Length: 237
Image 1 (cartoon, rainbow, N blue to C red):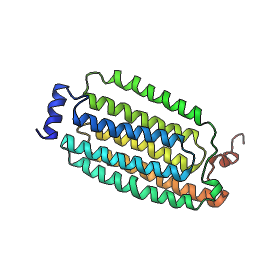
Image 2: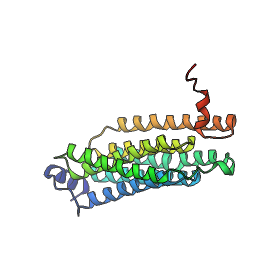
Image 3: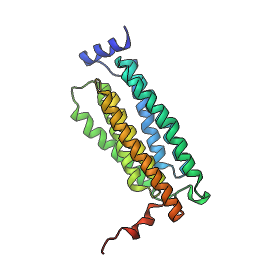
Image 4: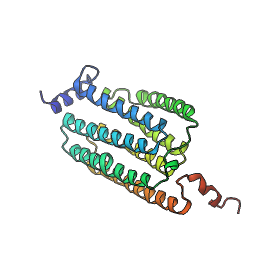
């Protein structure tokens, strides 16, 4: 039986679960992406952060490729190619060039609040599971757990954007969030390609703007620490 036919049969029968190759591979890829999200949350060296982001981009491409194979959806191969090219190659190269412009002392954040961030990350993953699994009762197991993992990655990306101080680390959080959105999209059978591409394109444009903003900050303030902007917010005037 072809993977797409097996996928359809499992979807109709609701039998896809542990021991099924389609389920296991997708689950491993999603799980490793979630693990990389915790690496991103923990990591304070910007270069290592960019490298981990590239690894997550490659994993996302593999997840989209596998879903395209299993679902018999050739449009997901396009998503996989874009994810590999943009998130696994081009964006990391661009971010590395930005990092190389920084002074050595600015290529790492202070190692403070790591424990609290990791604890908050575990709580957010637990929250994702508690919200998604009961809300998707009756759906196939692969879709349910894919959505739970994807929501966990999205929330961890948001946590990075809130807790990190440098613009480049916040960009990494934004890209992690978008990786979770794309992972959720490719895991839903029948998701139109235009929705996936428009979502990915929007966040990529935002990331590009954020990269330009980071470069301007470096030139203006000789730092990418966004807390330097606080005196310029104009509050109380």
